[in-house]
Image 1 (tube, helix red, strand yellow):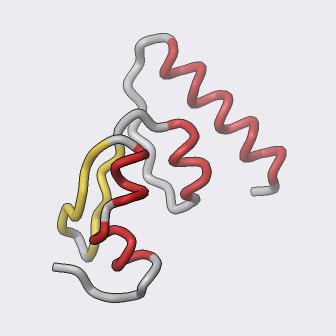
Image 2 (cartoon, rainbow, N blue to C red):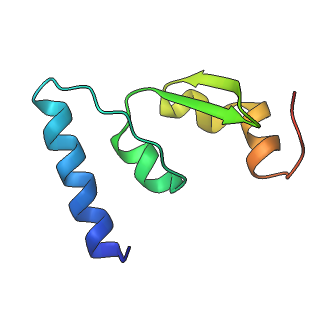
Length: 74
């Protein structure tokens, strides 16, 4: 998707969420995820690594190691 399409998708997800409907988003674009999600669950090799707010996930050492450091955290 280009940036315009991502912005439109983000707006649609927020609109649905604001209607009180739960949205399950499976996505690897972290800017999109951090911008629309209230809670995030991070999986690593099929196992839950972390769950919490975007702020918590961004600072979680295991998430950083698994997704930015390239290591297997388990």
